[in-house]
Amino acid sequence: MRKSASIILLLILLFNMIGYRALFYYAEKQADASLEARLDRELYEENELVTVKVPLFNPYQIEQNTFERVNGEININGKIFKYVKRMVSDGNLILLCIADDHKNVLKKAKSDYENLANGLPANSKNPGRSGIQKNLNSGDYIYEYESVEVWKCGSSTRNHAVFNIISIKDPLIAAPGKPPEFKA
Image (cartoon, rainbow, N blue to C red; front, top):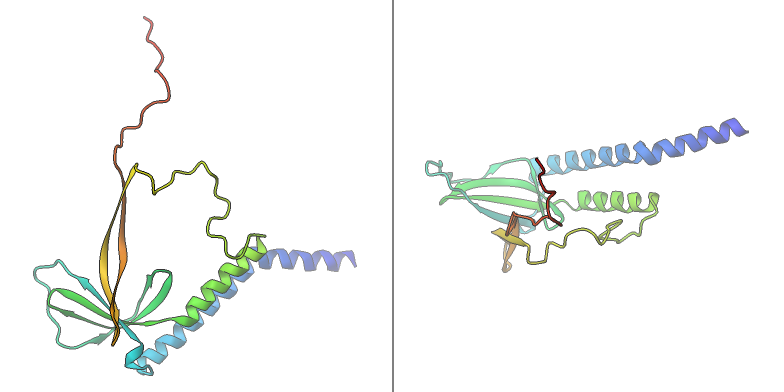
């Protein structure tokens, strides 16, 4: 009885350490494969596509007149989009993307399971952070971003920041006290 109980508890421990990650990894790969197959067969509505326009700073870029099928994904504000088509026109890379709702649900489920397994609150944004950390909203840092124009077909234009740059205003940090004196 003790032996079987210890084996069961060991299996539960191994699942909590490694198994659930492998399970979610496999589920995400299956979701990717099914969505890619659906996109290859063009089984989607044109109104589901989101257009992402990125400026290209290459003076000898080859222009394209038609869209071509492309694979990949982008994360915009925590939501995953899969690339469907791309085209280079007027110095801009134009990507047509579709929301990957199944992968978004899997990522949220994985995060919820990790929080539950580790005894953390389900919706905590700052778990285990101490008050000693530097606040990035203070005046010691310069926060810059480059925005990319994103819009959905048939709706209004929205901007999303994709390039974030955080730099220190004054890199010279004062010492907390006087240095030791030199005695010869």
